[in-house]
Image (cartoon, rainbow, N blue to C red):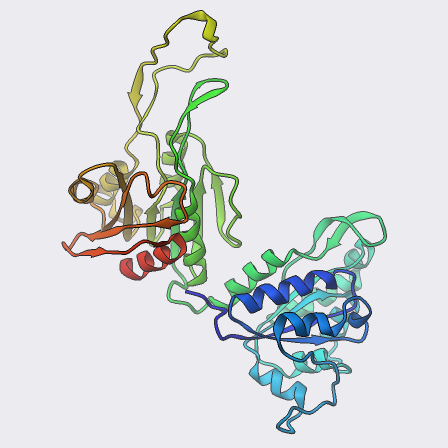
Length: 399
């Protein structure tokens, strides 16, 4: 699900050096399928020219509060009504003050004053201006009126100083915009717990037993659930993928870590999707020092079984249904007898649905082939598709 597709967004750009980031933001929104209309203040045009935004949005920039549309309608009134979301990035201290006090002396402030669409503010300014009580009071006023604020980060500022005031990055703004647009989506009000990545079991301080799981499927599921309005808790063992904005992140290493996190997060959840690939075995003991290869010509490492996470979830669903998720989805990655092994796991772990993937095609790839098997006996055999697309199908099917 793409909440940006065919959505009309007014992107307000005001007079800050951070306006250069807004061009990338406008381009990203356009590529996501939104109809992007940029409204610039005169001060913003000193930093980035209107032609830049017209090139990436393929629409004329709104500049004049008195301008008429081609249909002789008042331009700022038309876009105030047409907009489904207004983003102001960067939002300067001056802009925040104008909005808080109801001024409408430029096209952007006039649109905001007249609109009923949600407004997302991404402030950018010097630290002193950000911390000034007047700015903070204006922000609180705007929040009380229902506007969304994505606070600036800390770092190098245009003056050369360091401190809080850097505008959020375009990816963060897009993530927050997605949350706003999805707030009435099909999973709004639902809490979804998703696991991702392969776990690691230590042999010694430098070596581990693990697997080839990249975590991409779990992250795709988290992105899709967020796009549908869910509150998402992502339990992950990987740290080299972009974090889905808005998800609660819990970092884990071992299978025991993963079990502990799942048991904690699943309480009160509507759905648990176990896309992680936990190691089935771990060394019986961990060496305190690095094992030197010169110590022996061969090395034997006794292994013991790790906890069965889905087995424990199944037990809780039977004995304490009030403490278990309403729906549980598992994954089966198999080198042979794919469907037979997946069916056995489906029944044994009391899953509502299982996603059966052939190995090695599933690990690390952006394209995956899968068969979805449900508890009611139905099967859905899918062609190879991107993991983002499969995530959408999985959420469609589990309901």
